[in-house]
View (spheres, one colour):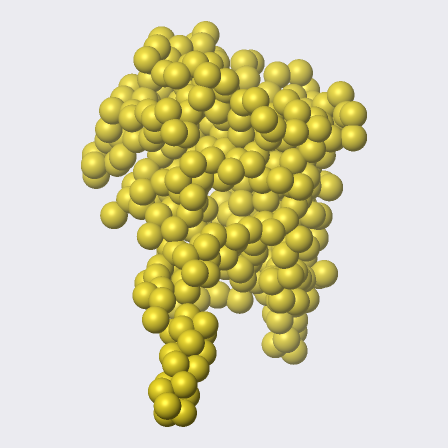
Length: 355
């Protein structure tokens, strides 16, 4: 009898430890949009860009928080996680992420400070030299930690124009061979990128996967459309110095992405381009769409559907890469749908990965 009771107790103890739970091999981002909680304010928060530092997603976005009349850039942080044992997704807007991640994010706050003006700053686009530009094109690695190229739009001279700032260091080490500290990497004063700009509104720049073209939106021909500017041959670490000096680069409207309506906010991740449009056939206002690159051209745009889109406006989608293993990809976008904190809010949602 005593042995039977002992066996019962052991089985109870083991089951209470969840040893028989199957667990999950990888995480999954929620497939219905989630409001980004405390990152949002009662004012408009939209048009973001992101960089991942450690386990922390660094967000830079446009906001009117604090009762501003104009949009300025704000830097906030988000951390996402998935409990593989319980199958539970969590996120926090007050992440820790480790001292290294915090240090690498600090320059993004400096970037917002130098880009902001008394006019509207919209559509930020940030690339990390270490993780995006150099590592993608030079697998041998680099030492340009905490260095970023930032493109954005501002109407400080009237219409929206595209500007550039960066903190790239030609020599990331001191004369004695010691790596420069993050604090020794200030951002340059913003400069215009004239070959992309016109007398109309030009905004939302994004590079293709190989950094050989810049896609952006413009209403230079009437309605907003997505344009492609083919860059002359240059090294990827020359982008910050060469982009403001380019003249005569071919610029064309991307026919396969165009409609009779407004097509805006392109963002490219490898062979997928996401954007927003108020073209006919949507679910109301501006909807989010995606297009796939077939090696020669962008395919016909596909609506993300009613689970992600609403009768309100969905704006500026971006795709984020997380180092943790997830079965789908995280997309962050803006919407003024009911239930938010006020005006436009930032949302997250999981979408199928592009193989």
